[in-house]
Structure formats: C-alpha cells, structure tokens
Length: 132
Figure 1 (cartoon, rainbow, N blue to C red):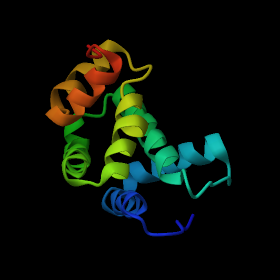
Figure 2 (cartoon, rainbow, N blue to C red):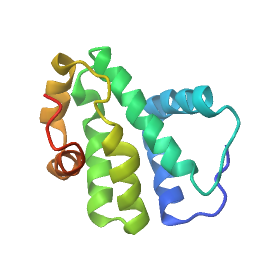
Figure 3 (cartoon, rainbow, N blue to C red):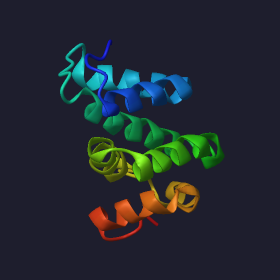
Figure 4 (tube, rainbow, N blue to C red):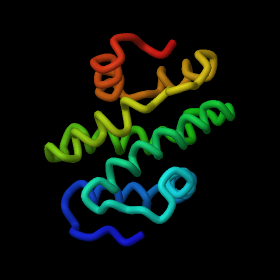
C-alpha cells in the first residue's frame, strides 16, 4: 500500500516499516487479515501501529526474546519523545494501549522489563497497572 501525503505520522510509519521489515511484514499480514485491501489513508498509520502491537504480542506469546525488538522499542520511544502531536498520539493510543493484550503474564515480564520508561508510563496511564 502506498501512503498518500507524507505527513510526519505517515513518514514515521514508513520509516518503521523500512527499518524493521520482519515485524513489519507480520504487521502487514495482520492488517490484511483484519482489513483486507481497505485502506483509509487518514487513519492507515493508526491502524497499522495497532497491528504492529498485535504482531509484537504474537512474538511475546511465541517466546521470542525481547532483545529481538529492543531497537524497535527504543526507536518508538525516541519518536514519542521527539515527535509531533500526531506521532505521539498514535504511539500512545494505537501502539502502547494494544501492547500485552491477551498475552499470558509469564510471557509479558521480560518485555515489560525491556520496555523503555516513557512507553511504560503511557501504558500505566491507560491501563492503571502493569501487565505483570
């Protein structure tokens, strides 16, 4: 899918896909499973970051070590710290709020411990408790 206008959020989404092709492919598959070919350009990046969280959750359930995704999580954290309002909002409501969903507690601990502090804070603000 080609993203229309290159606003900061779409550019961020594109950059994550380019830097992390393996997990991006998993997220793309999940996006297609959920939405098919439908792509509302206005909300595509939000939907994609939600399925990126789902793909990461599947990796957690598959006992993939968090070290595999450390750089991804750091990049997302840094983008939250330096991004514009739309990027920050997407990371908060589309990505972080969906992390750890339906992941057994045993598999969340290592990822929670590896999660950058700013992402932990966002998670706790929304869920009011850690997933472990």
